[in-house]
Length: 413
Ligand SMILES: Cc1cc2nc3c(=O)[nH]c(=O)nc-3n(C[C@H](O)[C@H](O)[C@H](O)COP(=O)(O)OP(=O)(O)OC[C@H]3O[C@@H](n4cnc5c(N)ncnc54)[C@H](O)[C@@H]3O)c2cc1C
Image (cartoon, rainbow, N blue to C red; front, side):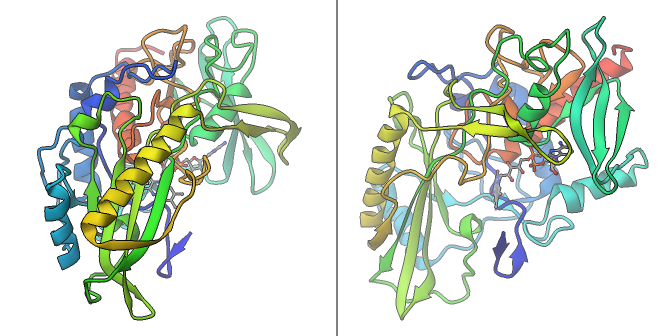
């Protein structure tokens, strides 16, 4: 994707989950709670935030815990400052957005990406062996112990096939690809795919549904000098604490006012992002068709349920409330939720949980059925929250990597 002539690998919007998401109660037959508590994740969040360099402000709000910031919040336009006051009178907190600084790492925007910054730092340790063009096709397993022995891969530059041995395997190819890899790793110890005795591998697929509105801000001139850059500018409205516990999962709203003009009119936009439930029927499975390397192509089945209909109504209502408070005359608003997949916040498919009967990994991201395999991408999310997921993915990865390091140092695996 290109934004403003720059390539965008991710938007850099970085938000913590709150205790509310991690301790969520069941809804519509879906289990949403996580097997770990906020206190167990907080320090790992701080480690990641210190590394990536965030803009933001400490607000002390229970639905959105504060982060560690290296830089201050972005400057707000006069219309955004007025909106903070007017929406505040309706008991909503509108706070400056939180995001990775364009100047914090080695990439152009956002400043910190895996490719430009994290991999480069890992290489500088001298302990990284990077195998470019390696397309992993299968995790290999010892049929006596059931433990992973390594990974098979194709060198896509010349089609040669290889096997790399490993004491511990981390799966982090992205939610859909991790599910495919696990489902494609079948053997006598894992007949339905690696770690799939619960039947949950591939299931519980989620994305973040959004509702978008744009409009004209009649009362304000265009504010020059406030560069617009999606969720890197403007305000974030986290859910009110009182909104929690209803039959609609909490959602957040992003509000940018007075930063754009069109045909002499000052514009504003509001988008709401919410939580889709982890329905068991939403899944990635292996299709009969194969890719050029002979690996079954992932087949995705995903649809919303009644909760998401309630969510749409609640989001639209709150956007209209916010527009009125902002003086924003809506000219276009989504008539339905974005289709699953549009937000590219793929989550679920190897959910973490308290029991091997109902989940794929435990609270340390360790596969119940294959203890030297860890799943640390969005696949491990048992529920999505409303917050953009990457900060949590990174924090879970820090935690799991430390844990796996301890196991290796203690001679296990
Ligand atoms: C345009 C855009 C904007 C976004 N903005 C935000 C944002 O502002 N905030 C936010 O929190 N999230 C955002 N996201 C989501 C974010 O990009 C993902 O949550 C994040 O990248 C997930 O990280 P990951 O490491 O788990 O997976 P990925 O970033 O997908 O990395 C997986 C890696 O594994 C490699 N891989 C996959 N399969 C194989 C295989 N078989 N063999 C070998 N390698 C393999 C891939 O090439 C890739 O490098 C955005 C996404 C998009 C597309």
